[in-house]
Image 1 (tube, helix red, strand yellow):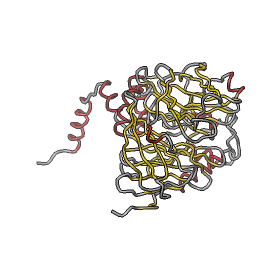
Image 2 (cartoon, one colour; image 1 turned 180 degrees about the horizontal axis):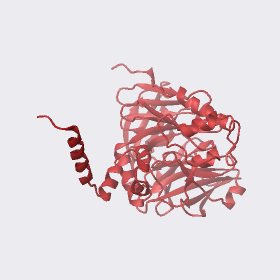
Image 3 (tube, one colour; image 1 turned 45 degrees about the horizontal axis):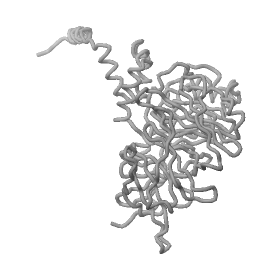
Length: 431
């Protein structure tokens, strides 16, 4: 039976006008989308634009992202003062995207719910969200000016939904810990460690849930560890955990795996063979369980980053390695020339933190205008390309960062050259 096309069009229009999705349902649907897809959709209507600013949406979207949209992220500093973020699919290990992160800091904490803390040798620091391209400048501290240098780590407190930054101030003969809640305007001095009493094996914190952990050395002249120093971010209290007796004479390193604190012990078995074992902590009972032995021997200078199911990730400034704990396969990715690996971890595209005071990183970067195109995979947007290609703007520096348009254009070209990063097999154990 033939129908008039005009009549069909009218029927379709009439049907469309009857479709109504409540705003609550729209918010629920948006919360299931990847963060960058939500950003692209914000211009559809005012409700969608305002929705992503609501704390309830931020929490709901974060929970969904942690369940469905996680990535492995590597952050690298470039030789002319920008940062790249490379992401990989955790299920297939396939390369996903490369993004520009608008920060001129050459040091960076591990990611926490889509946030990182970037800082420089002067102690200046900011909390960045690479997805929204917004940042929060951390307040200055009196101790920062009295320190040789400072390190920063960001963690999350689920019970209060607060994000806290812990700074370790390196001073002459002792370390001082300071804590700042994101959104607050001041630091709280919480603990001072004197070199004569306690010495951290490494000052980089290992973050598991709402805790931060450091290995304590037996003495300054020894590489052996005796305890683990713990900072509970919820009540901001310090405590200590004993290490397993079986590994007290081994070389030890802490790392996070599947939401638990893990310990990598390395020692010689007496036959010039290096043996590495993984231990997992039960923080409730403060017991340790031997998980398994790693067969492949890691090269000197390679440190553990984290464990994801049966895969364990190691790395240094130039290479990221993945060890399959089931079949012993070792694969790796070299960082692009001129780039240094400064951070690595599990990453989600979130809208955290839900606090006031976050400002546009892109606007600060360009010093031109804030209405830049939204980020997309391996492409910072047409406004970025326009800023680099304009003869009027070429060579012009931002007053806040000192980047020139030539630097930005060079970074964009670099992202185009590194969109096919592939894992290479370096060792495979015969079955």
